[in-house]
Image (cartoon, rainbow, N blue to C red):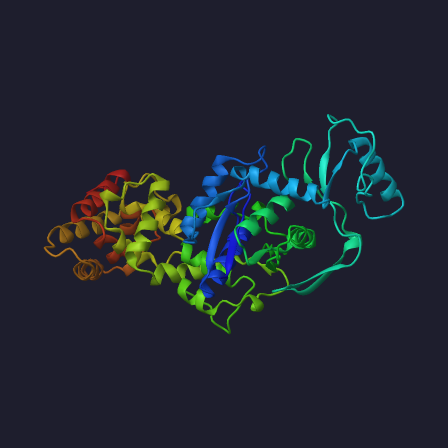
Length: 467
């Protein structure tokens, strides 16, 4: 059975690069009817935080990438790491290194001066005499000194490393705590991971880990190293490009379907298809079709996809996400139209739900500020007649809907001999505070009749227009 894993370190948020790796691992497992597992690599006790753990869980849940088993925490597995370290020591495949910091720094300086690759020289590899039992030591893995490590990367192709280029890696620190490369091997072995899909910044770790698998008498998984993501400016994607974590995209008004669809296409393609449901991603995904070169993040493309999903997802799902945006703004949506009606008239006007909420808040709260430029352009003493006529005719409407309201506005335009904007724009200012909204008849229709008439009255008072 195919078993993949996503193994983030809880030292920050779940970022976009990690989310794409998680998605590819999830899709590969599901495509092959296997399992997708989550492992929290929290052995860095100084940098790992509970807040980061929760951020990872929250991000994965929002994206819908559920682990098929309970998450594994490395901090609960120190006994297993110690067991395997002892095994390697007993079998002579690892050794205690007593080299102090000063010796190692001097060694590095010498190698740098001689233009050699800095690496441990194996000083303690064959045992060191006259060491006291209480002297500090680390444990190093006895890497093979000859031959090559060759593996077929499912994305990058065949990769070869000479063992002579690999030094004896520390697998246990002086306090006995295990190091990253060793814990990964033990975990992947005991979790029966068959395929490791991860960022290509881990390529140099792979030969070391393969040698450790072999030393433990276990076959290494197959590897697939995913190229990095670059920002719009061609530089490595980071928080300076905008969102820092996956949930920042949620706060910015993106739907998880849009982000997943964007991430799956960020370095992978299936013909010319642009839109993929999660089911279609699983059906079509092929690791061998992932690009070998870095992919560039394009915010405009993500926004295009987001607007597509705003328009096409079930309105109940979009409304729930829009409700959260209003909550972030501190807006009480119980005092206005139903959100499905707002979405219907705003979905062509907003690329994110944050943008939609900000542009729609006037339906749910009193206008606190009117745009001064719009007021100067469209509000004058002559506007009094417009407001009076509109108020009078709207008051007589028994059916409060777009069609009836449009008829009233058109009637006022014709009776006063005005152009449509001369009526519509003052009305928009009275209702919304500016001149940007859907059609004025649509805008009015989403207010209650009482609220619309009250705003027209309030506008007359605010601008001191004589009745």
